[in-house]
Image (cartoon, rainbow over all chains, first blue to last red; front, top):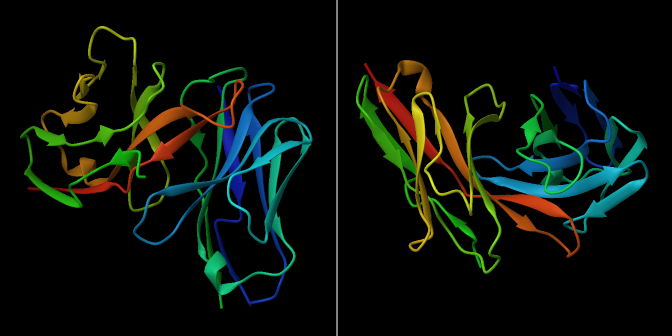
Length: 114
Length: 118
């Protein structure tokens, strides 16, 4: 069966510090991978989407970036965090191809920028 | 323009009763998909049910059913025989084409907080 791992679960970082969140998927090949952000009490906002290694599409221009160095690994990064980057970050995968079925989410990372 | 609208910020239901969570959507794409997710206080997003735009029958998954009214562009979630463990945030989402080609994304509503009372 397929599983998705996301870490760390919680993170407190000062403004201006770098960020690296990692997500890996097991049990499937060539998944579509996503990074979503959820601000407190709000819905989910798509940040990045990847259909394959090195293929990243960005939904919202900001100081975050994403990379996919391996087929089942998706990394969310920032060189300098802003206060507004605080939120709940969720990684998700869907089956390969299009449209790829439902998204399956990791347990999320709660990021607090101080 | 908001594409997924959930008009109920919060809902209360008595244990063992049924509850309907509303969702309306807006799209001009003839092919689309509608999803419901559950988010407990722990934060994980749990996929509940899916309805395709061409599906003739309403989707059902155990105690969950989706009341799909295409002409009205609504996709309400019905939970039968509510349980205390159903207390959570519920999100409606629509799969839509993104940046042309074969790219798709899920757009989420703002959610409804369901509280099941004993």
